[in-house]
Length: 419
Image 1 (cartoon, rainbow, N blue to C red):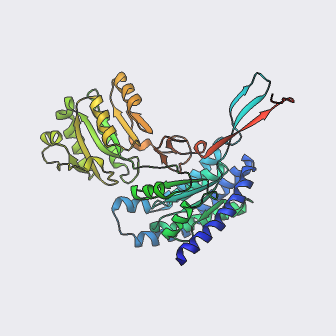
Image 2: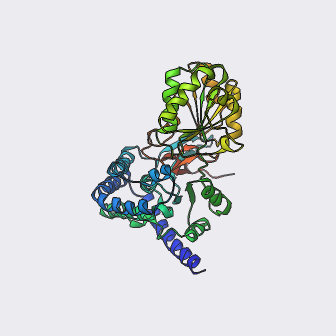
Image 3: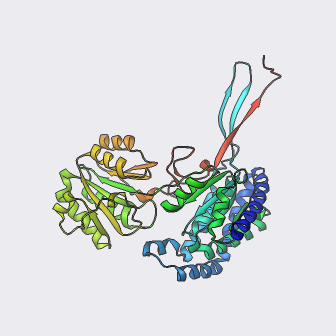
């Protein structure tokens, strides 16, 4: 019980400080927020040795798959990418104060819908340390204070990154409480965050199915959910063969441990006999393993047979499920049955089929003739992302600055009174 009490007391103190900081941020001009982001980027570069040393401790202790180790590992290039991400966010237009709608009523009242910060964001994430920097940048720019709780795998990395960001905040004259990190990876802190109704305005979980399900099950705070990335690439009968090979190889193997990695390859029966073998050969040369249905194995017999759950599995590793389908509607039915509404792609030279797929697939992001790994806030021009939302309320797809705002109304009158 002591852990729960300590976690609750720390969270309540942090949330009250975050609320005060959020009020200051909401009234801080874009120039000051952008300046702070640039100073924070410089601080990340200055403290790179400390960040890498802390990360080395986390990596040394890590006992998991190669793909998850890659997600956890930092190097000079990745620290530089975090710093550049902050600078890119600083260069984006200010999301606050934007007039979203403006209209006049017959009685002469002028009504405006204006973008404002959400307030205090609670971010719960797992092994990727850069998530803390991305979330901090987006929250600061959008006028929100954030409380970060990273996973046990990255606790030292998260603390070192946060120390660098706070140093930059203070140098820029903004409250350190704008960006706070949990003092440890105790699960009791997650429970305290989820129970913090009235203290935290929005919880964003970013991690595996068990984390997201726990947050959705237990939260007494609104949740912006990030489901599994069970992404599909569908190679249509009219696909350009060389394009299909390049896209599938990139979509699966560029980085296997990210949520935008393709987990299932679907290919039309009409071309499977000629096009599946070279696609499999490309993937195999890159170190990929396979789980295939009977039709795919009839063409490439050495493929491992898929079991009942393989097409429902987010591999996050060098494994891909392979299925043969009878046209675009068969592919859409497979995706509807097994997908997670995250990111799905079609490869085809047939415009009508592509538009049919893009319209009918129920995904937060759908692509035509492009790798699913483009589902990324940076690739969308958002500078960074705080996660990929797959629900249907408030936001879908990469969550950037615009998705971290809400709105309020301002009404201008000339003395009107209501009858």
